Image (cartoon, rainbow over all chains, first blue to last red; front, side, top):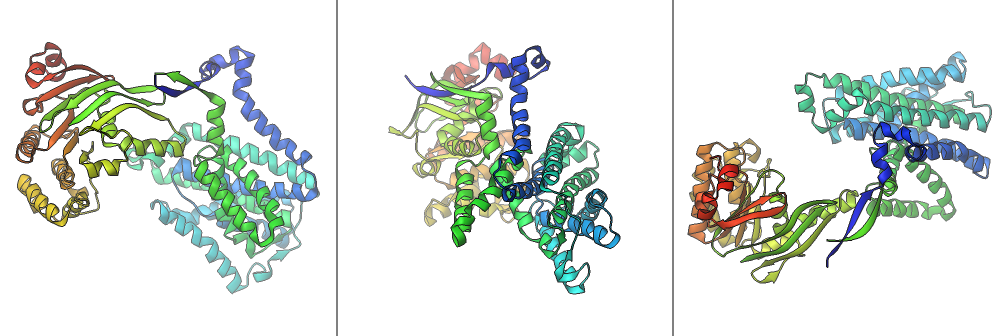
Length: 334
Length: 248
């Protein structure tokens, strides 16, 4: 007799799909367990890691996670492949740094201003490319950081090649960690809520078929602009935080790493899940630190691990774990 | 020529083909009729082997798992696990649903891609045959495939399939979305292909009326199961078929 593997949903999931979830504590636990454990791990991780160095790595991972979040939001919910991570961090970092060094504004004011104004500036630059799709948008967004980098270098403005040193920094590592991590969580779950609201439904429809959306009398350009604003504001926030983490703003904020790393994190964690990129960033950033022991071979191992993850878990880690959580498999006779 | 034994295909837990057993006789036209979701396209994908590619993609993506059980015999040889390109080499050629022509290549280029496996001589001969079969295509030789009309695209799709030198030609819903006039022209062309070249043809369609006159043998599928089988005459006279597929 032939056999095949059958995939079944855990019975409880059926009940938890709707309002019935609240009828039993098991249902509630089943729904909340993954989310709560994710939040709990994120919040307790800084307490567990051994040294200040590792705590610092965690904050950097958070910055990358935010960039990955903005990439995933644009790529999988709006259909825009944006390589502008470096553009966002650069603009956000420089606005925040300038406000702090020129006017002496405190961090609590510069970071929000950099987020809002930086998002607007990045969006203005990206608006002309909104009608074009696919690889073209990616190329343009990849060019902007290089453009800004060269302009600052050539005109010797904003501190030129030396950058702006001596910015305000976070008072200590704990303030740093426990302000950035909760904001990361808040943005992640906020975005996840957003993409399931009406606004997000329109965005996903634009990704699938923009002609059909236009036929429904919806202004695509306006929706895309709003989405790009959200993503670039998140990126600018990450850049502003980064400037104040280092107490320094320089041309390295426009480095290509900030564009490429988020993509790797998204691929590893699983695109289209929003939580996946965060997990991906928290795997890749410490990994790259751990591999420092290998010296020059570091990049080799890093690339091998990345390639292996992509080949054997193409979907990403989170979708795989989600499936394992919701479904079990068994052999059945046909 | 083609023998299918106890074929079962699962998309995850959904049963797309349930214990399908049937045969295609050499040189005949066999028709498979059924409503949407009956498993006609799955049947075509399974015979042509494309389902193996789909299976691989789904595994990579972590999507639904495709399970294929049963046996497909082509000319007495078990082809169940042979790759789709190998099957084309053996002579099983699929003309896919919704045409799937290459929209940015010209008509001639589309046909040439179809004749990739054929020798230069064969390709030249078949090309002439396709142009004599569908004279409209000859005038549109240099037009990009995406700019052809629906009927012309379907002719091109059939022509492209012929270029691969099929022994068994699988036509998946060749009349989809076409006007009755073009439908009858295509049906005539299909009959002519069968008569002139002796190619065995397996054809699926939802609406049996235009196809039934040229079919030697027919099967009716519903929800993945073959519910009726018989010659064209038997099917035409069957009251159930009359009601469901002939609109009488």
